[in-house]
Image (cartoon, rainbow, N blue to C red; front, side):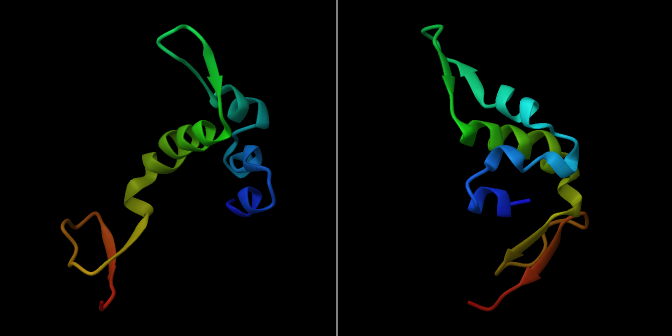
Length: 80
């Protein structure tokens, strides 16, 4: 998924998660308090992560120097 960012096409990151390019581009827009629409592909990545990846938070692995804080969170302890 992140290889698309590396090759210059972040709008493709959600394709394997049923996020079409059109959906990504639509989610790359925000309306500023002034009413002006601001577009930035980074906003689309943020929206994709919130909607698709963070819903499955228990499946993510975190690398930390501390012990796991809950049973639903998997962590790998790495010596510092």
